[in-house]
View 1 (cartoon, rainbow, N blue to C red):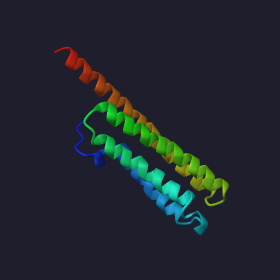
View 2: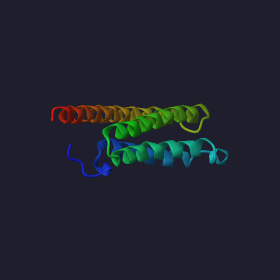
View 3: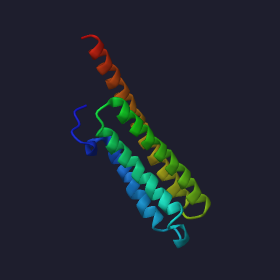
View 4: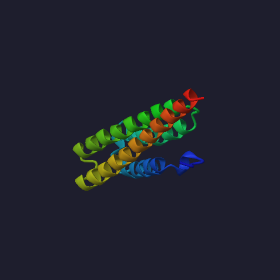
Length: 131
């Protein structure tokens, strides 16, 4: 993988699109949710992208993996918030199901990136011990 910046990572791009979609979704929430569910959604969607970016900037594979796990947790949190928004009647079933599919696809890509990082970590460790 010859990626020069986190912005080139497919997983970051997908998480960014999810973040942008949620920012649009929460604009339709009632005013009473501005500092509640809408704020939690904004924070979780930002956390998904920012943890990927921060992990990418870390020197060690294990740190990157840990930040990716945090991002994965934020993506799962968004699924829960999506369910809450649907249960409260703020979004319809189509928006819920389409967005949930996008999140699960992003999680799959993120899991692939984590697997790549684990493999790279293992190879780096093996190379150090063989010297």
